[in-house]
Length: 365
Image 1 (cartoon, rainbow, N blue to C red):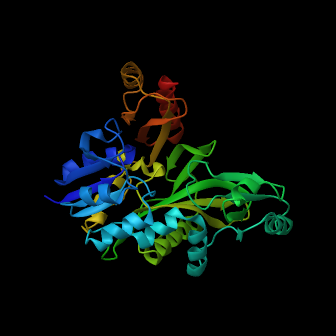
Image 2 (image 1 turned 135 degrees about the horizontal axis):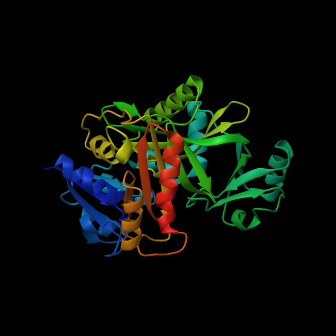
């Protein structure tokens, strides 16, 4: 029985558990707290930034993977130096941890992305604004997610507080028709398999809804998305699931927005909607096992995130009113704005599926 260790006890680690059980894999989780979302598989409590805690946890595991990308490079390097198999490796994770490094490497790979610059001062930001219609998106290089560390600016001093800590990433403000996500899995031997292109809807910087596949996506857009994801996966030597978040710009460009090197919110629809879920595929990939079929199980799939909390009576009510909808609870305590679960439904009629998914999610408001 292979042993896969997961650093981080969040919902992504939790959703790896059923896939691990089905494949006969022993899953061990290094969780931050005893009441973490992945507590069903937690075997150690510790901080992923603590080298000693991580090295102790990694002993006996065949491979280490991650619930998030925030494990520091020095901790990753210590595992590699100790002979631990780490997938994805530190050389790949760097580009999910540092947005400036990501933009530089994607430029080297020739991947289409928004015009961008490394900005060190208000003077440099003023020049970027002047060159891009007076508006820009500014991002902190590290630590931002779900809309955090991202700011629209139209003033050269709009990022002075961030610039006090070092350079920031400035990007053109892309006018886009919609946001898309292209997921792909790659294993060390080089095999890679993409899923169909997904359409994502963001609210306040957080993914709220996913439609699979993306509605009305032309063949050229689909091909461009797969080509981008394949280039990134091989170019960065990613192992496991890679999510490439994309803009479908109003001028026809398909541009890389962000990267995630782990199962991703946009891929939760694959649990119920694909021959192989992103969680099973991630485990296969990090163990260098043959990858599974990514064919959809129905013409359409809809996933809607639920925020705040999922009480037992709410789950029962949702299931009673919408028996075709699947509810996935993350085992988290209730907190306003907290991503607490999601609902998924698959079938033939997209409008009906959206209605049913929203009707189920409404039970948790």
